[in-house]
Image (cartoon, rainbow, N blue to C red; front, side, top):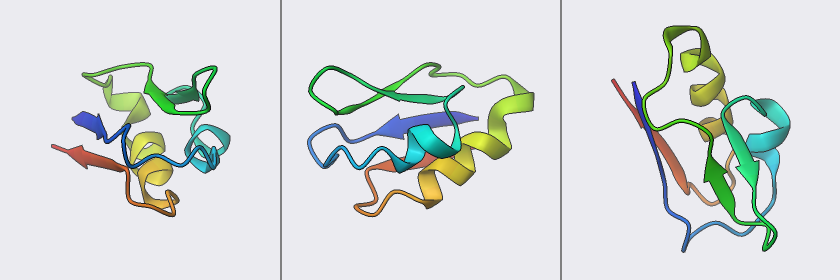
Length: 63
């Protein structure tokens, strides 16, 4: 699975990092950063959950 972040769209709400801190974090400007581009299988559900809670749809996952 891969994850994609639209950093221009991110508004820094941080919900993704709250739900999946192993996958997402915020930089000093409170913009999402990805901890992994290619996820290990054990983090896939976390990545999907973090993407779902993004209020501005700045995150997406692909198989």
